[in-house]
Image (cartoon, rainbow, N blue to C red; front, side, top):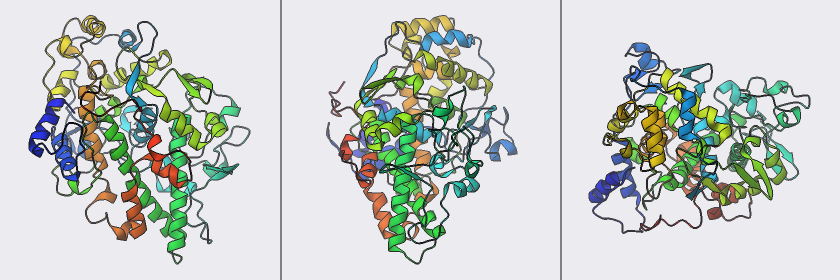
Amino acid sequence: MSNSLFDEVLKLAGGAIDACGWADSALSKVMVNKLVECTRNRPHPWSTTSDYTSWKSLTDRTYQARHLPAAEAPGRQPDPDKIDVLFARPNGTQTFSNKSTCLFPAFAQYLTDGFIRTDPNNRAKTTSNHEIDLCPLYGRTEAQTLILRENDNSQGSRGRLKSQFIGSEEFPCFLYLPNGTVKPEFVGLDQPLVGIPIPVSQLTTLFAVGGDRANSTPFSSMMNTLLLREHNRVAGELERQNQSWDDERVFQTARNIMIPMFIKIVVEQYINHISPTPVNFVADPSVAWTANWNRPNWVTAEFSLLYRWHSLMPDVIDWQGTDIAIANLGLNNKPLLDVGLEAAFTIAAVQPAAKLGALNTNAALLPLERLAVLQARSNHLRGYNAYRVQFGLPRAETFTDISSDPRIVTILQDLYENKVDDVEFYPGLFSEDRVPKCPLPGLLLRMVGVDAFSQALTNPLLSEHVYNEKTFTAWGFQLIKDTRCLGDLLARQGAKIHPKAVTMTLPSWSYCWDAP
């Protein structure tokens, strides 16, 4: 959020924290409400179904919702190929974050791949369930969930997801046979999005999982593997404590526990890392129970674009002494299998991420920036300034209001012929200066915050009459409450690394106000 919004919250809170203090649950509630209420609540009047409101646009959730109505094309739409200059590095040198480790973009990708699911064959449509439901782990549909389950009612096996052990480590099963064909038992799963031919030796490292993007990098696979292990551990404990329960009840209760546990991590590790403030956001679902913004989720076309954080990833990952180019990490689980889960998390948690924004995207990822610009145009999104106003920020009157970097200002002036109102949503979003003490630019931060809280805390499992011991068992309910970070899950698996070392924040970072 912007500093001005935070200042307003401090006034409302009566100065409850000092410069480097931590807020309690009450202050967290004030901040969540203040942030989410900066824009209109759902349901949105429009979707990508059409450029006007209709019954279909209000009910057909295979299309994406819209924060703003469709717009006519502005006076100037630069050639998408020419927009590369806004994202490409002018001298080939990558700049790095002084706050974030690679665990931050790794988690962001896994999180968003679960519900930002634009249909590659129709960019107006989505295959999303519109919930944080861990579908990369469990599948998008009940049929896929059944494929991924053991479905074994014998004692010692109830409620488990299918897995394999490689040495002493548990991983998802492999998706492909040695000849590169899908194993018959996994034919009903969404197949990995493979855009280019890859060797069979690489293809056969991919896992049978719930999402077509969950094998996208070893970092995504490590997230899914950790959650699979935790699900099976939770199922084992539930079976031990409730020996009369059948396979179905053990599985469903384990899944009930896992989803709120994941949402706790989203808020209390991921969102707190993004936040530019010393306030400790708390994943307290009661803030949503009587809130005006507690409405059914529906992912928007804008949200599907603003999470294209391509510039966060370094060009090269030091994988236990071996440098792996980012282009060689795609659809390849061998690096994860070679080092194991704990080492993979350590690798992600010690390496700085790159800075998010213009002039910092790897050359191999520039085509994805062009596709994002084209997707925004095909969905008739309004210009950048319209979204600043919609989310309670002042209009940019000049190009220097967008960026203080003269290189970016010059590029924008050239692309949009000195007409600041012609700047498109996606280029403007990533051209902004990053908010001090935050890895994100201002409008992007505001939009992420609105959707993160209004969609995470409205999950059905967090609702007033569901979030209780009857849904999760007393043991499971306490486990949810005790979970705050990814390191907690690793520790339960016996990892030797301290939970606080599995961090999205560099050790050199300080949350005090004088931090850079």
